[in-house]
Length: 124
Image (cartoon, rainbow, N blue to C red; front, side, top):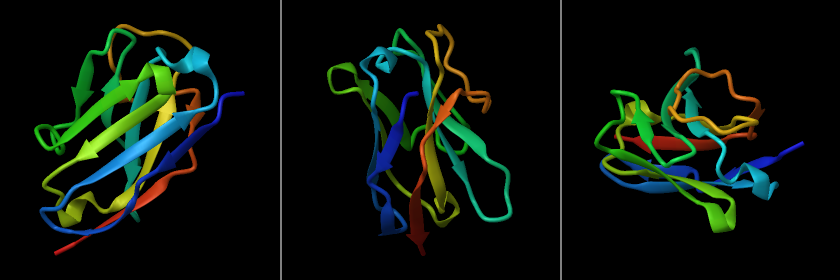
């Protein structure tokens, strides 16, 4: 069973930046499709960034141009660089992994494995 551990969350003022990391316990997942999701209080979980086996990426409109997803396969780590943060970005952020390769980055939340989440709070 793969384990995903997020880190890098915290509190930041609007306009600031944070970088989230997601460490995977199994090297075999280094090229599987992975994604970042977030859930704000009272709202449904939404997919915000995804990366496929070939490194193609996909973003939700709300974060496109501000957030960047990337991966370091040698370190089994997924990243989310978040710039120009807004108060509406406040949420619990989760990374997720599929149990297999895919060739189209997907934002729907039918992933097999999930981390515990890391809180991001953006103040105005």
